Image (tube, rainbow, N blue to C red; front, side, top):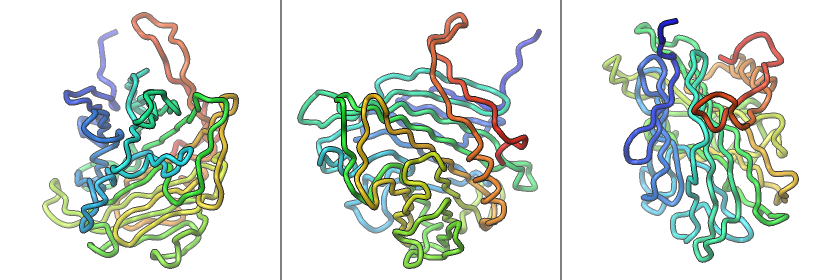
Length: 324
């Protein structure tokens, strides 16, 4: 049988990067070098090809820790893994698997969370990322993107507390033009609320930030956005949300109370990001949420095929319709 290149690929690049490509177009890029205190994703490209996220705050130089899409937490045993002024660091220890496919591209990596003053690792985070194509969204045939993120946080000690905080675990800094304050964007949620004052601190199944971007492919401004879904299996579901009109949103798993995890029962969090065209459609977002809820989690196991060490598998969807 002749070799055929998969539609969805994870391509390792120089400078400690891994690019997620669908139909020859980059949708997302993972950065895991040591120039920053923690790994991050940038860009997250919308259907037009424009990035829907940015690095840093548009007006506050003390927010350089806002690295597009990233994992962190403000209070781990009282240690700040959120800001850039702390000595705490999150480092990629190894990649486990890069899997290409026609339906999705999947990456699995191990991250270590370190105090900075003590070389001993506090947490091992197993991160699995699956990127797949959504609906065709533009006349030129470009499509939307769905990014599924599954993290298992396993403490090295028998028990570890993630403290009560607004900040953690997964945050998204949107592009300036999507911001409600700096651009022409708008925040909305699954409960029909609109804007920071109505949404901040409240629970919702999903959150959306949408607004105008300049499309390099379409030579003009179009409306696009990111819908951010909280999986029903997450312990705080439906999660509280930390959102700001200046252009960011985060699911706050420890907003109301701290969370204790153990070696025997590590914390598993699952999220989905949908880079979509046009304004959010609540009915469609609810449908995507329902489909995401039915998807079984990923597992990483020893590979049984030649020249591969690890493999990533998932159970079949309990529903009959693929997400997107």
